[in-house]
Every structure is written in C-alpha cells, then in structure tokens.
Amino acid sequence: GESVGLHLPTLSVQEGDNSIINCAYSNSASDYFIWYKQESGKGPQFIIDIRSNMDKRQGQRVTVLLNKTVKHLSLQIAATQPGDSAVYFCAESSGNTGGFKTIFGAGTRLFVKA
Amino acid sequence: ETGVTQSPTHLIKTRGQQVTLRCSSQSGHNTVSWYQQALGQGPQFIFQYYREEENGRGNFPPRFSGLQFPNYSSELNVNALELDDSALYLCASSLGHFSRAFFGQGTRLTVV
Image (tube, each protein chain N blue to C red):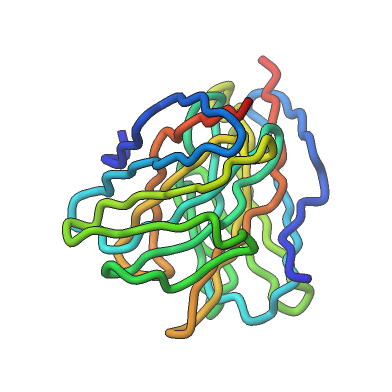
C-alpha cells in the first residue's frame, strides 16, 4: 500500500553541523510534501513544504529536496542548534475533488549534542 | 501559538463509550483534518473536512465520524470506544488543500 517512510529512526549531530533527514514515499501521484517538527507534548509544527513541480525549496536554515525519479524527500538543516532537537516527520498529500489525504512517516528523532 | 485550539486536553473514557473532541480552526481557514497519533508513531490521517463536507478519509472504521460547522470549527466523534483508540488526537487547519497546515496541541484520549 501507500506509505511514507524514513531511512533513519534517530540522528545525532554536533551543534553547528548540518543535518540531513531522509524520507522515501511510494505514491507517485502525490502533489504536495511537507516537513514537520514535533517537540514533546506539542502538535507538529510546519517547517517547510514543496510541491511536486519543484525539486528544491529553501527556507531559513532549512532546505527541502524532492527527487521524484526515486521518490525521495530530504530535509537539510544548516548549523544545527540545540533547539532543533525534536522528532521530524515527512508527509505527503494527494487527491482531487474525489478526496484528499495526507500520509505521515514514522518520524526521525534528531539529537543535537552541545 | 498556531491559533488552533483543541478541547479537552486530556480525557479518560471507558471501553464502549462514545467521545466527542473539538477543534477551533485558525481564523480564515476552511479546511480541517483530524489525525490519530499513537505513542512513538507518526500521525495517522482520519479524515478531512472542507467547507462543511468530508472530502477525504483514511483507513478508519465508520465509528469515527466528524462534523464541520459554518464557522469551520470541527468535531471528531468516536463511538464504541476500544482500548486501541487510546492516542493523541490532533486537528490541523489550513486554507484549502495542499497548503500550510497548523496543528493544535492535541487531545490525549485514554480508554480504560
């Protein structure tokens, strides 16, 4: 069935280094991809999104890359800070007037070492 | 703060009972989605409402139902509660499909 998965369940990086979180998806019809950050006891927080007609999008310290050929999504965080420690989810959205849905991956926990 | 509020924050119910969870969406947002998040897992899509109509549903049984009101607030109803329904229930609002969604803090439901 359709799924969005992550290659690494945990990632530990040194403060100041760059972080890369990867995600694979299986629905080639997905139109919209999103990265969320979730801290303990809180709801997911939007980080960055990208539409299927793009392959790269940059935000503040974050970059999302989309490779539709291999159905791969990645989140790059520059100069990782202790406040970046959280669980990161990728999500894909698809649909049309007949119905929409969003599928989340299982998540990657990012630890930032001071 | 996202502007999305959920109530109650915590709830304990007995197996077989019914529960209603509420979500107030961010001002101007016409789309609300509901998710179930079990401990240590990613959110699972339950359904989405757009302008008061359900327009997308995940793999959840019919005992999970919802409503969206004219002011775009929403309810999630779960009948015949089962132990496995214990989870964090999240709602998210957005302006239409394929746009930035803002999540509430969630309702922690425990079924005993």
